[in-house]
Image 1 (cartoon, rainbow, N blue to C red):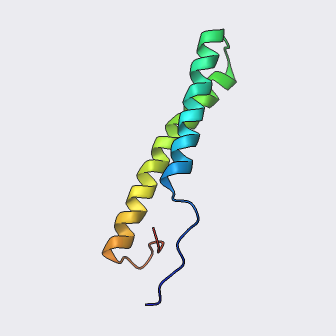
Image 2 (cartoon, rainbow, N blue to C red):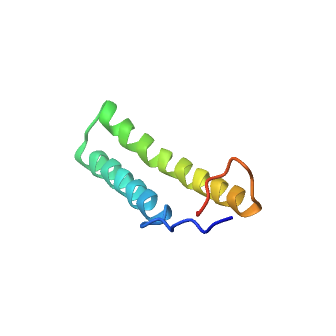
Length: 74
């Protein structure tokens, strides 16, 4: 199999930064007393960041074991 080019940015860093930003926004909204859909949207965004970590780990494991449907170069 030919070597594939390496991605410019790893997957862990952008997902980590995005997850932290969502949780920071959630805390700021809690402290300022914001209620309603934006408060829960920021919490959901942070939670989905954790789902993203799971997907990255799952794809990396599938790539290491050589699964046919896995993304390569992770």
